[in-house]
Image (cartoon, rainbow, N blue to C red; front, side, top):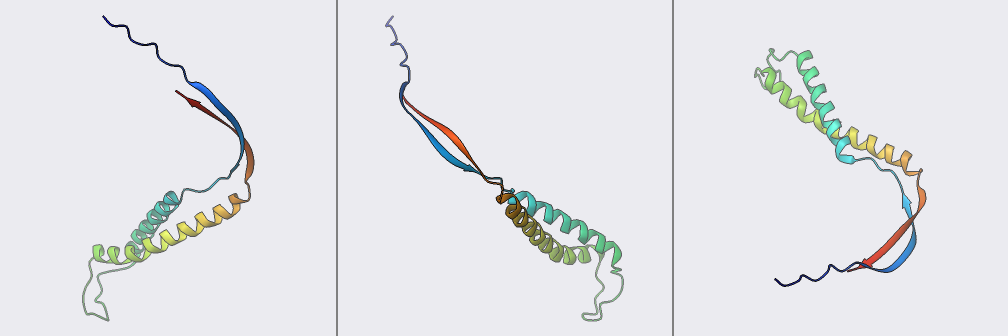
Length: 111
């Protein structure tokens, strides 16, 4: 049986201290999804409030509740996403002022 070579230990090359800026930022996807969810809820509430059994004066068609929900959801989801984006931008402005400098220890090894 052949002997396996001993594993090499990492060799310390250098150690640097660097200064990094840490800032908090909102996750935009979460805010956009929350805005879309809010838009769907508003569309659902508007669908219940709007009576879709009347004939439309413009098209002379009776729209079902599902159609009314679809039309209002198109508008409300877009408005909710826009509102979520605006809230995220405001949070970024407010939290962006709270940046701080930290010292980072950067070590480099070679095998």
